[in-house]
Image (cartoon, rainbow, N blue to C red; front, side, top):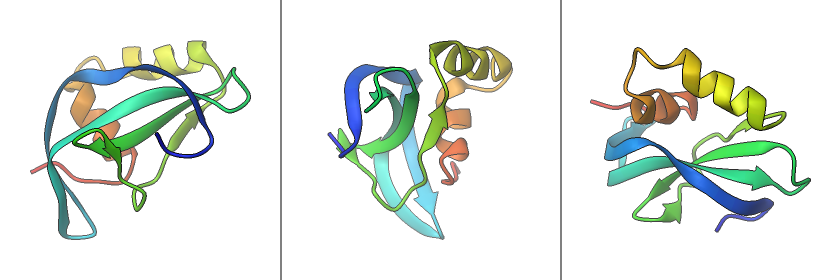
Length: 93
């Protein structure tokens, strides 16, 4: 688990996919995972490839669980795993 992350919450969305960051493939089994922040209240979304953090990708931080759930609800029209990967700065092809 990447530093400054607390307890695992969930994999964001229901699948994983190939993803690219700055034109380079970062993996073929990439997903976004949500963890509690080190303060125990905030929620941090990070990209992982084969369960290992992708440190080159941005993290998305939400102030609390309600803000994270609002994000999930707002992206209901897009596959959530795609929206989460794109929110962390990577692209899905």
